[in-house]
Length: 353
Image (tube, rainbow, N blue to C red; front, side):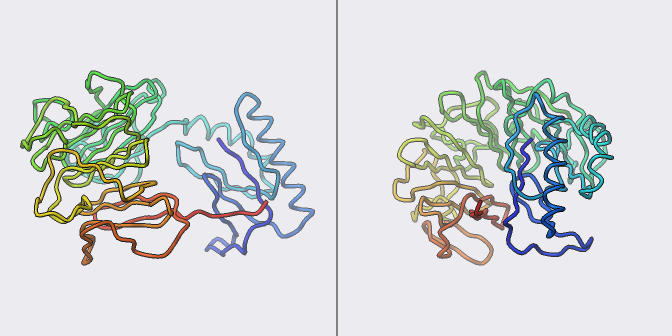
């Protein structure tokens, strides 16, 4: 858990409850305009959190007053006024027991067992906590495909559940798996990405392996096949550190020279290569895009360049870009995430201390 305090905030915006707040990292901040109240609140909160976390690592910036804190993995927010902190300290302990660090919450479509709770309910409109024992398998990363989910653990294990219609969970059977099941790629897994009917992983040394649908060459093994039920290696890629999957294309970032590999469907130029070929079954290296971060949508790829601006290749909405094209003049982009046909960009925020 990280606890931060800041006093020199920009003017906060008002929300319906009448409180003022802003967000930095995983902690929400409420501004208090009285200096004496601010000082008292700071001392109270520091005392509570330092006493309660003697054996935990805390990063504390001694400014301002925090009134909303949430667990890093549980993603549950608990809102309390400053003057109630002492009275609710014991209640907070109960809350921490209820929302354990590392819990996984899921909601939405469950028609193919994506929620992973073995139920026959077709949809969950509210977050449901996974009943699987993730405390015994600490989560490192997770990825969500069209109708399946994969999780990597700190021990290098790979778990998956949901649809297996294209063998994306590494089994020849097409039977849906409605509970987290340990997959057997036969290697230590560092990272995972899920697309439409296929799964890709990065193993310990940075090699890429994939399983599932390969009709557009999205597994990068040199051939196009409707379905592959065992993990196969993508050709020629070493020392990968990030992998992204679109509907039927794949992008890999390499930790040397900021290089990027692309393969799979290119019918909308989503690989950033203006070519007559509508797909690449072999990974192609792009040396002129200088990626810092990358994300894949259905038919497009978005990157944050080393210059910290956003570039897009492919088709998104009514716009098409044959190669990676800058879409604005911003120079402060930090990271990017992509949905089917929309993009979310995180902007760097500089805070004076």
